[in-house]
Amino acid sequence: MVMELPRFASDVDDDTLTEALRETGAAVVERVLEDDLIERCAAEMRPEFDTYGRRTESDFNGYTTLRISSALRYAPSTQHVIAHPLALRMADAFLLPHCLDYRIGSNTGIEILPGETDQVLHADDDIYPVRIPGMQLQINVMWSLCDFTEENGATRVVLGSHQPLDYDSHEAWPDPVHGVMPRGSALFYLGNVQHGGGANRSNAPRMGLINTYSLGWLRQEVNQYIAVPPDIARQYDKRIRRLLGYAMHGSGLGHCRYGDDVWVGSCHGHAS
Ligand SMILES: O=C(O)CCC(=O)C(=O)O
Image 1 (cartoon, rainbow, N blue to C red):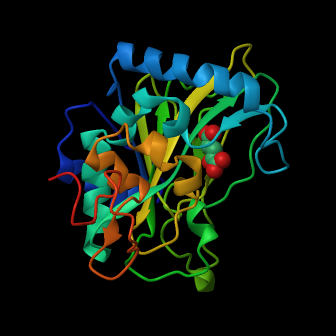
Image 2: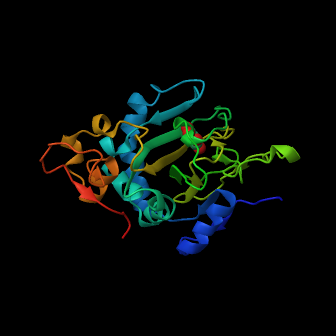
């Protein structure tokens, strides 16, 4: 069956988007973010990109890509992207059936520069050495902070790769498709979907912000307590501190005697 990347306007209803994600593993929602927010996020991330963006160079991340982890540390406006109601409603739909609360795994600015080649395809939840049928461990959102095109390195996704292959019938995954989308859009993809950054054959950088949300009882991909320590986390509201992990999962996991105003304690659910 040939699949196409589902594509919706920003007023898409939750059931339609959830259904599309269950079916293909990925979907684009176009033009969700206001220009002003995009510009503030990009401006706040710029100094970090320029100072630290090359620290993560590797065969996996590429050598012509700037990458800055933990956006909440230095770019406070990204809180409005990380806690965007649409993103949280999708995280609610996929993660809350399997946990009491979920967290940010990573929140990373990625600027693919001209000349970068295709990133190797991978699934983000490969960091967890388990697969539990019917359970997504995480859900991801790549936000386009500029137009994403085939030429400038729009994220490539393998549609249907969230479903196991039927090896008996020599089934194989299809070729990846590019998550082409206008500035301010969201490419949603489930944690076990094969994907990767694209080659940038244009003459301008491609800037995106990727946020992953993982089940609350898993270790977060980034150690958020070091990345966004209490003195910085304190500036954010409770919802963001919960997403960072300054909260318990239920009544038994993640307790401490912090007793400070940064500590949220026990809580359930996000978007509601
Ligand atoms: O930059 C992109 O489009 C995707 C990057 C990615 O998938 C990753 O680094 O895990």
